[in-house]
Image (cartoon, rainbow, N blue to C red; front, side, top):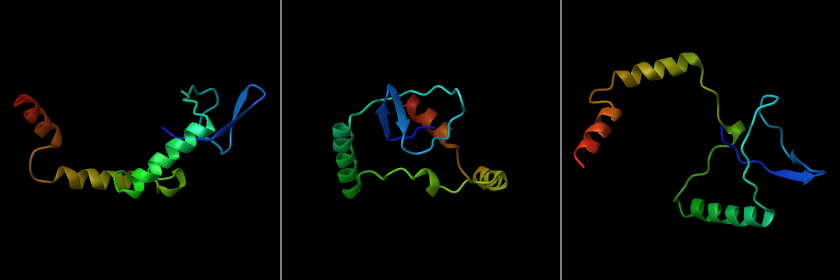
Length: 97
């Protein structure tokens, strides 16, 4: 899971401003961006979104979880599609380079 969060540094600890879905004792990797850098990065991202070059990732609460049954049904429908699997096409194209 990759997630961008905002945290406040206080008394030697980073305190997230929103709850995190982490297990107790789980190790994470942090990239610290100062607010100034974060604002600049946010402006760049917003301009890329406005230009239609990228789409923002869905917020954690915006994505509906897929049931196991729905996932199986989709896998079965995709397996019935005619033609070669994408992995085979990629392997063939790599061989012709």
